[in-house]
Amino acid sequence: MMLESNELIETKRGFSMATMKEIAELSGVSRGTVDRVLNHRGIVNAETERKVLEIAKLLDYQPNKAGIALAAQKKKLKIGVLLFGAENPFFDEVMDGLHKKLEELSIYGCTVIERRISFDLQNQLRTIDELVKEEIHGLILSPYNDPVIQEKIDALWNNGIPCITINTDMPDSRRIAYVGSDYYKCGQTAAGLLHLFSGDYASVGIVTGSHNVLCHEERISGFTTHLHAKHPNIRIVDVVENNDDDYKSYEVVSDLLTRHPDLSALYFTAAGVYGGCRAVLNAALQRPLKIITFDAVPSTCEMLKNGVISATICQQPDEQGALSLSLLVDYLLTGKLPENHCIYMDLSIKIAENL
Image (cartoon, rainbow, N blue to C red; front, side, top):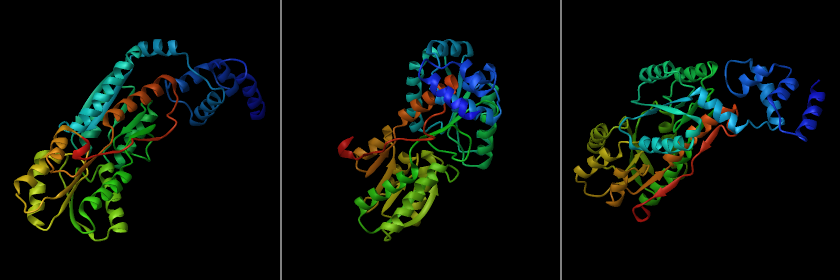
């Protein structure tokens, strides 16, 4: 039977554009089942879904764009966006990119419901449930790193709500794609930069956002692994959390400088950079610290121009927002999964001289 189906597929592929009716005939299911699979309209048996998608791909099925737009307008797509840090300017740039893409997709009548929260597991679970009550069709999520969130993403998928993770990942979940940086590589890059600025000997304090956010942990892991392997005389003396908050960052960095007077460098894995740098300036140190950070938000650029920060690593936040929305809307309209499950942003490095 499969051989006959393959022969039919080859024959049909050579003559005309595939239709749902043809996919249904070759799959041995109803046209309604094909419609549910390709347009993600409800739960379908996993084996049936796999077969329908495989045949649609073999036939190079292309949905009618005018029909897609009309169906989308009737459906009135709602996309939930749940990010960390109400005061984090990085995510402001993510949303700027997302809203620009939303304007491009205006023909589809898509709307976005945005929520920004702190690093709190129960808050994230509660906010996801609130978005579901708003009848969202898909979710763009910066996930808290906990098995309960993985279970939540899987449950959303099983209930017809696909999820794309952004900026930090939940790789073992049923999210349809991750859009963001390769954070282990980010950490390695930061370690290489620190060695360039500090030489073979340094005492480094790491200031991270939260140990419960995977991207922050991967930035630390890539950084420390690279230093241990390549530059063993650069020592990590402490790791502190600032919850991506400038006020908290000021406190923890001030304390770090008091407890480690020999500190010669700081590595910020996330936000709170401005508050941490203010603590460094107010400490009136005898020698300047070498400081490596992420992102080119305005306050970081100010510190970079003033020589407080040595270098910052940029990760295209606007593109992260735009691409996440584009991929999710495309899936909701066509049923086509992204070709790559992990879409990594290109990194760029900013120093005072190339701002």
